[in-house]
Structure formats: C-alpha cells, structure tokens
Image (cartoon, rainbow, N blue to C red; front, side, top):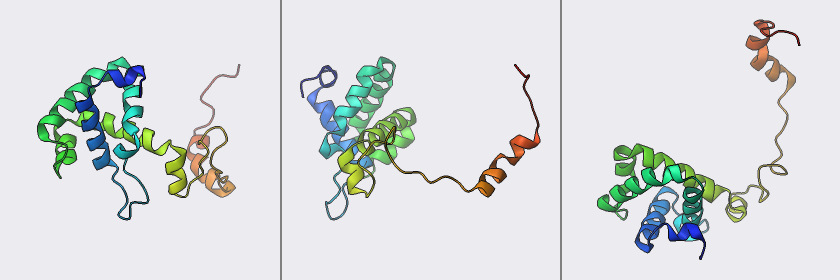
Length: 148
C-alpha cells in the first residue's frame, strides 16, 4: 500500500495495530469470518488518522503504551482499555468502522453488502401505536416555539 497514510506509521507500529485489531475483532472459531487485522483494517485506521491530525497524538501515545504492554499477550486489550481509555475508545471506534463497513464482512454476517446509506438495509416502519407512545411525552408539552 503506497498511500500517504501508510507512511505515517512504521512497519512495527502497523504490525502492532494489526495485532490489536486481531484481538478486538478476532476470527471466528471455524475461520470463516476473518480477524480485523488480518484483512487490512489497519489501512482504514491510519487513513482515518491521516484525515484528522488531532487524533494522531493520542493514538501514538496509546500505541506506545500498547507496545510496552505487548499486544500479543492475552490480556493486552483489557489492560489497554483500563490504562489508556482514550486510545482504546478511538481504536475500537475505528476498528468497528473499518471492519463493518466492508461489504465482504457484512455479507459474511448475513447482512446486505450494500452500504447503510443511501441504498442500504431495509428498515421496517414502526407501528403507529409504538410511534404514538414514543412521541406522547413530546406532544404533551405542547408548542414550545413561535410560529414563523
């Protein structure tokens, strides 16, 4: 991969990101659904970091601590979540976005390969009685704005 985002992180850092991604989203027991790191989700992560430079410093600090902990250890992700919550939340969010946005992964999970918007999943309309119950508190407050 020769994009600019790949150059922001060393090969060792990319390998560490892959190892963490594989722990966050491991492969299925039978291997039919791949782990996140093994299918290149790290490329999505570093692209996202490249697009928002404000995320790079907190990610780099968390990644450095992850390297100290050792991403290969069984409890690495739990320790990182506890010790580096800001980094963990960022890594988790980017991992999920990168993994579940892939049409090939959605298809393996029995979901539509189409993106969610604009042509994605069929979402049934809620029944009128449910909508009435959900909106009753708001409607009972009455008008709280001025007519234009």
